[in-house]
Length: 168
Image (cartoon, rainbow, N blue to C red):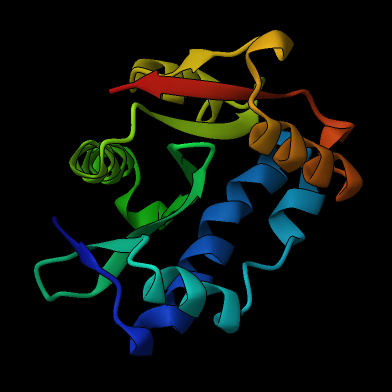
């Protein structure tokens, strides 16, 4: 797999990857997550233009996974990382996270952050294996609190969620 910046003409592929990756939530009783639409093309384009969107590409240079990030309170925040099920369990997601970590270090960011479901095996437990640590409420920055409020308003708190941080 090669990690590279996403190209504008590939943005619809990112939506397809996210839809495919989301289907595993249906199998664990979270159909609302499986049915949630990926970010619209305009929003994905904003990540591209900000230089905060990457893909893992196959040998044929076809995206099989992607990661988009935001700058939140001095850190880089993983907004979304999705791996197509056909490429899952091969270290692709970890490679994208490590790429983001290297990018964050080059910008002088002290950490990566993310929000995730605590009881989904490929969410919080996976991120812990990738070096992220759970944050308690007192450690949340204003930006992370705002993200969590938005997620709660979107109904994501129907399932246990948390913030995590990976120091760089």
